[in-house]
Image (cartoon, rainbow, N blue to C red; front, side, top):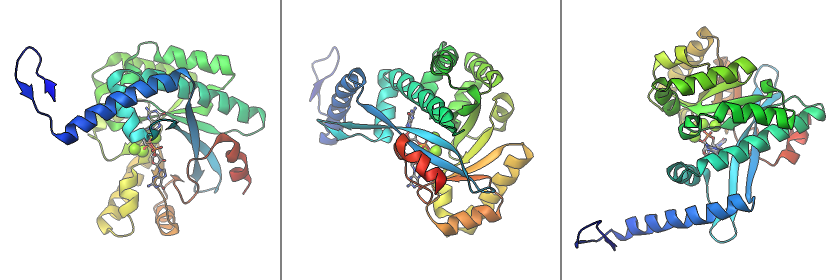
Length: 277
Ligand code: C2E
Ligand code: MG
Ligand code: MG
Ligand code: MG
C-alpha cells in the first residue's frame, strides 16, 4: 500500500502493481552498483551479406547477469534505465566497448562494422555526437566501422528535435552509418526517411517469424525490399531462424540477414571463428 501524496487516502495498489514497482526499484538499485562495478557485458551477433555469404557486421547487445537478482533482459532493463536516466551510463559503456572491439578486430585484420543501439533519450544529450567522436579517437576506431541502430519511435520524435537531427548529420559526415531498427512496427513516416541519414532498413523479426505461414507477410516483405532498393538503402532482416525463411529472403533479394540461424549473440572472442566457418 502507498499513501497518496498530500491526502489521507490509502491507495491500495493491486498486488501485481506493487510487485512491479518493487522490482523496478530493486533493478534501479542493482543497476547503479553494476555500472559502478563494471558488471555489464556486451555480446555480438553477426549480420551476413546474402550475396557473398560473409559476415560483414555485428550488433552489440548489452547483457546483465546480476549476482543477486539474476539475468535482467534488455527488454526489461532498457525501459527502466530510460525512465531513471541510467540509460546514458549504459550507452557510454556500450559505445566504449563497441569502439574498442571494432578497433581491436581491425588490428587483427578483421574489418567488421559494429552496430550500437541507441535510444531517443540518449540522443537528447547534446554531447552525444561529441562523445561518440571522442571515443572513436580515443580507441582508434575508424568512423565507418560504427553503425548506430535507432528505432522508428526514435526517428519520429527526432523529426521534432532539430538538435538530434544535427547530431546525426554530424556523425554521418564523419562516416558513421545509421540503421532503422524494428522497421515496420513503429509510426512509419516517409518524411523522416528524407530528414534522417538512414543507410539500412532492418525488417522487424515479427514479420520474419510469420514469413513462411503468411502470404500477406510475404508480399509485405517483398514490398519493403523494393522500397528500400528504390531509396538506395540496404535491407536487412532480423530474427532469421530457419533455412526456409532465409531462402525466401534470398528470393526477394533482401541484402542481409541476422538471427539464430547464423548465430546467437556471442562474446567478442567467438566472432573470429564464426568468420572463418
Ligand atoms: P533489437 O535491437 O531489435 O535486437 C534484436 C533482439 O532480438 C536481441 O534481443 C537479439 O538477441 C534478439 N534476436 C536476434 N536474433 C534472433 C532470432 O533469430 N530469434 C529471436 N527470437 N530473437 C533474436 P536482446 O539482446 O534481448 O535485446 C532486446 C532489445 O533491447 C534490442 O532489440 C534493443 O532494442 C534493446 N537493446 C539491447 N542492447 C541495447 C543497448 O546496449 N542499448 C540500448 N539502448 N538498447 C539495447
Ligand atoms: Mg538493434
Ligand atoms: Mg530490432
Ligand atoms: Mg527489438
